Length: 235
Ligand SMILES: Nc1ncnc2c1ncn2[C@@H]1O[C@H](COP(=O)(O)OP(=O)(O)OP(=O)(O)O)[C@@H](O)[C@H]1O
Ligand SMILES: [Mg+2]
Image 1 (cartoon, helix red, strand yellow):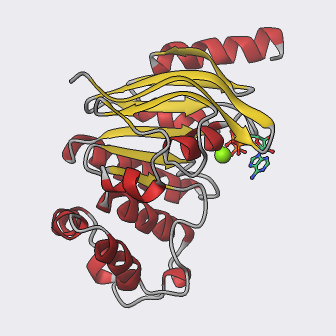
Image 2: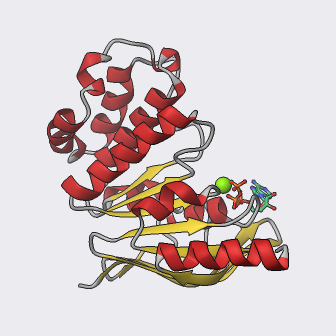
């Protein structure tokens, strides 16, 4: 199988307002795919539709060859897609251990995954009894990535993982994501408003504008095009 995820001509939105308009995208095995685009372009709406929080109006979401549109979020996560939401990825009043146990209690295979993740993320044990809301912003984000990884068998979907982080925490997160890329045998789909994090990491970058993908390509080509467009055309 060459693709972990296929999004085909997807349309979705809120109420009667169409946001994602005919979006198509592929994520290959062990591939890192970035989605960049301005505020309000529809990145989060697209990812929420993939995860089943929103139902597609039309089009398909295919994971490991199986059509998953219409399935519940719980079922989709059970199939092995991990999700790191834009915000609210950790429960701040619970400890690190309780956050982890919520996921391992709900999804059977997450306990096995936890053993593997402990080696890569010392925070899981070192901060086990710390209340998650008292971790630094960067540490909370790393915990949120760990919680997503617990259910990610083949794919981890991340929504603006670097949002709100100071430069040092951003650099740390970037190293964590590189570690995931090199060690966990997963495909990653990452939406970011700031392209610098994804260009470093991605094999392919898609540019989203007003709900549609307007360009895709290798990160260096995409960045060059975006810079030229901004500089010469003011777009
Ligand atoms: N729950 C909602 N109800 C109605 N409209 C919404 C809802 N959530 C988002 N929208 C609208 O959908 C559009 C796309 O928003 P979305 O959050 O998908 O963009 P985004 O690309 O993720 O932006 P950002 O980079 O700021 O996170 C925006 O116009 C937004 O106002
Ligand atoms: Mg968003």
